[in-house]
Amino acid sequence: MKTIVLKINPLGKIDVKIPAEILKDEGLVAFPTETVYGLGANAFDPKAVEKIFKVKGRAQDNPLIVHVSSFEKMKEIAEVPEKYESIIRKLTPGPITFVLKKKSEIPDVVTAGLDTVGVRIPAHPVANLLCKEVGFIAAPSANLSGKPSPTDSNAVIEDLFGKIECIIDSGKTPFGLESTIIDLSADIPIILRPGPITVEELENIFGKVEIPEFIRTAKQVENPKAPGMKYRHYAPEKPLYMFFEKDRDKILEILEKENGVVIAPKEHTRFYPKNRFIVIGTLEKPFSIAQNLFKTLRDFDKSNFDIGFIEAFQESGILFSVMNRLKKAAKLWR
Ligand code: TXA
Ligand code: MG
Image 1 (cartoon, rainbow, N blue to C red):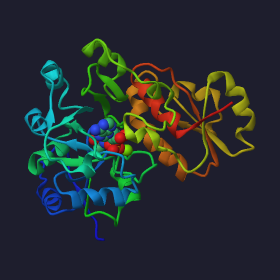
Image 2 (image 1 turned 60 degrees about the vertical axis):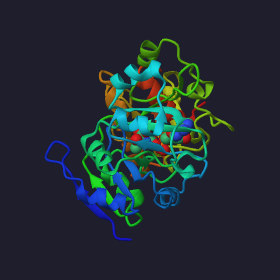
Image 3 (image 1 turned 180 degrees about the vertical axis):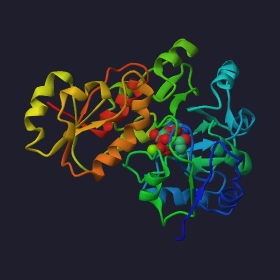
Image 4 (image 1 turned 90 degrees about the vertical axis):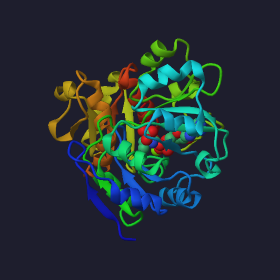
């Protein structure tokens, strides 16, 4: 298939006529959001949505998030409990997805037959305008299943060129980590995926929230609330280990022999040989670590190193969300 790569400067005059037409005509478009790139289809076109699963190699029982341009649009497809209205209005548009009782005839293929739907209002100007033009866009992250999520168009091209109609290139995505997911369909809000809106912020906003065990351990579970949790994720092809400071000396001992590389924040540069070190960001600005995470994993795969060792982070704020992804991407070194 011929794939158009369309450059759109998010800070300039934005024209999404071409990708909007493709979406309305049963096609697939990869587009930037403030979190990661999404692979979109018209949510009300089951045939188009089915193509997403095929192209990604995604399991059918893993539901998709529906993207809309406004709160009013959200209410067209989902029941928004009155007590959460003002909170949702405050948090949107932004890097957060709400799981709500579904209202309308959104095709089963989108929600994997659940009676809830994940809805997100992206703040990225390109994504938001595209939603405005098309109405309802079902979109997972624009990577092949199991691969790290794409945070620039090169990563999308790597995975999907020749397989979809259009890839929009708007440069790097600002957050680099997928949206926070919170389930508001039950009595107490449940965090299904930590993300750019942090657990601490959610606790402040909602008061009481449930943090399921699988969020902390990031273990693959049999019957999770967010179906995506049971699949392998984000993993590079090469072996990648996460380690704690206490094991640094052991890692240093084998680094050369195993042709390994260490991935760690800038502040720790002095601990490692220069030629076997990749900077992932700075602890001073922990959001930089989130922003670089997935690209670093992809770059590591393309590097000449045979094995990777990534330092574990303190689990608070955005780094809690980073650790949630790392626990799935890497094995624990012991
Ligand atoms: O930031 C993001 O959320 C990106 C951009 C493109 O918006 N999208 C994204 O989609 O990360 P995806 O499909 O890669 O991850 C969505 C997760 C999956 O784990 C899925 O199981 C869960 O959301 N999910 C979707 N709908 C759900 C529902 N109704 N109930 C529970 N979990 C749901
Ligand atoms: Mg994904």
